[in-house]
Image (cartoon, rainbow, N blue to C red; front, side, top):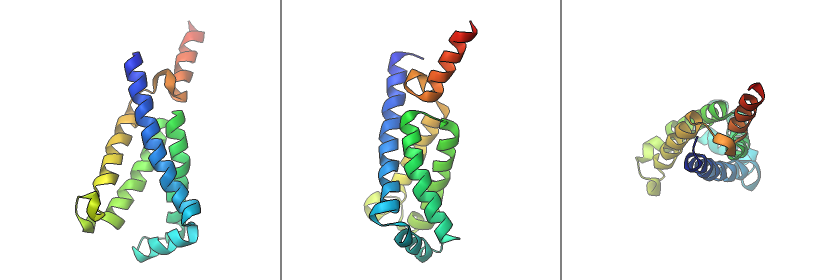
Length: 139
């Protein structure tokens, strides 16, 4: 993987990671799990407490793992599932535009997650670095 691709992967992961960390932090600390659960309940999300914890932890922890480049396919899938839930429970009725609280942002995040989840992190991420080290020790 070339230097520019390593850099592009890193930039995408860091930006996505920061977005998810902030949203997870909001659910964990700014609003708290109890308020997040109440909000999820108002949206008729099944098992709102479990969904609040899932969303908060996968966003916060997943954001950190994105930045580090750890378990990218799995982390991306968990966050995509979170965003699909956000689209269908919180945003779909508001239309497309994020200015109207529509599904534009979660859809864009899904696109970014697909890209980083399928791409090699190169040596800027733990997954790629470990793969690189393993290949070098086998030679």
